[in-house]
Image (cartoon, rainbow, N blue to C red; front, side):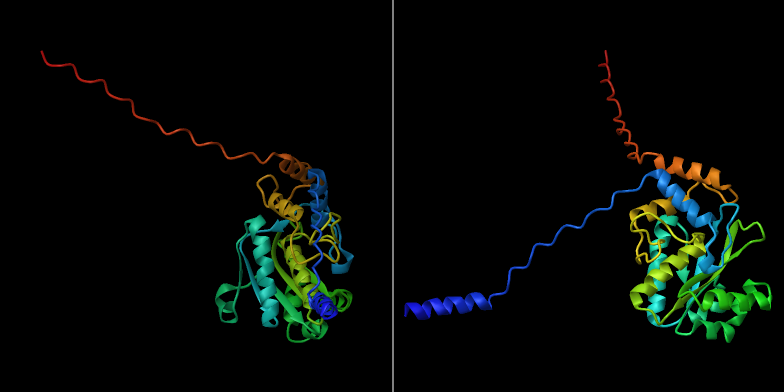
Length: 278
């Protein structure tokens, strides 16, 4: 009986689920220095991006006004675009919304996202007018952009500025290769939509940044700090690079003080008792 009892205990032990190993706490990424975030902003807003055929900019520029996005693609692409807009709207303070198909004529979208398995064929065919309008009917420029960018990059943005000085962004066309895994497409949409806001450089160097090559589909804390100062009062379109970096560094270095304490409520003074009548 003792042997049977011992065997029964061994079987119970073997059948019991293994104790899960304790998860290691995620290593927190320390916040970057203000000067590094300012330099990252300069890279993204001033540097040329050969992959997207975007030249270097001489002055600081950013999106102006509400952003109205229309998505050509599946429902999942529309959902991913909505999430990207939610992430970007919070630190920038910009008004952003998705435009439904029945609203296009009334709302006038100013950003178009195309998520398709064959972007080159789509932009050579039914959506060619998008590129034609962006390139002011320069057919050679349209064909060059398709060959140099649309056919080679799984994720890109074509910005449209208000004039040759490139100070204010007013429209954009975004392409996303829908053959890629959805996680890649989500990250692509976030980065390209950020490009439409003005973050058009070739990449970022800070850890965990969504704007770095192979960045994730979420903003890091430093990304959020960068976007807040990008759309803060300290920066304005038309600033030279050195002036922008200095102003951004100063804004980022400012301590986040606590809101001033409310003054204590005033207590009305007690009236002295009236003197008795004589």
